[in-house]
Image (tube, rainbow, N blue to C red):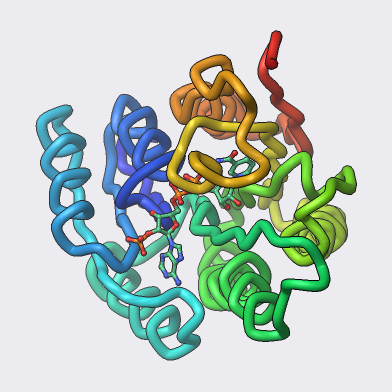
Length: 236
Ligand code: NAP
């Protein structure tokens, strides 16, 4: 893993930044993606201090051309992609009657179509290398319903169906596909929203999710963890 090339989307903050920092312990090259240049530069600085080569690309993952150009540039620079962590996500927690089709499409574009487009762009190179790990950060909302969650939950359920089918299809190419399904994590996504737990400090921390991602990657390559649920132990 010392020379792995790993793409992490949504690495400017929250869970994605924690994943980047955790995976920096593996060494190699980290390609960090998001829209906030300053925050991405901060993440690059942190991982570089851990001795890895960190680069960043700023752009909107709902833009297909941005994804295609980014992956092309990564291949030109590094020649391969070993790991893809589709973490970038957006949530609009509203009652259905208050939810617009634009709210729904915003979430579908980031939580589902961007994942499709990233995987579409990297998979030919993974197949050529006969090696790869793709981890989609889904959610317990991809398994369970909840009030305020009609559209977010729909995007994560779609992501689960996609991820599980893709896992069955790509394993013959020695490519591992996994879904990580966290419960409440203390990040911007849920703080001050109607779905935030009463005691937010009892929620999972981004580092907890990052550790599960590292576990999936660092297991023997012949071992494929296809799904992990992780939830806070005691939440009020
Ligand atoms: P967060 O703190 O709000 O961070 C979201 C990340 O996604 C940011 O880095 C953001 O980067 C990036 N992002 C969002 N829209 C983007 C776009 N259009 N283009 C590029 N980057 C975009 O959220 P988080 O809690 O860390 O969420 C990370 C993942 O975990 C998401 O997939 C989320 O659904 C999932 N999840 C979260 C929780 C939770 O309770 N927090 C629970 C289960 C699953 P920029 O702002 O720089 O664009």
